[in-house]
Length: 89
Image (cartoon, rainbow, N blue to C red; front, side):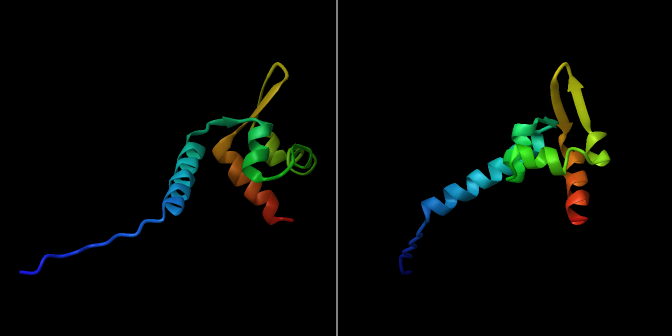
């Protein structure tokens, strides 16, 4: 029997990027409430643009949770509402 030589070439950078992407997706699914700053980061939109274009829509306003002067939005329903609003643009 001949001995087998197996050579595996790994692209460490690609593996690292894949792992970071999967971790981000898993963390994103764990959110219950997000604030305007996190929404801005996730949507790649400025806070000002989100306030002007999205937050005045009644579908998004009904997902808002307030306490004192703080505002948060329910994450999963917010994504669906944003998809609806953006599809109308």
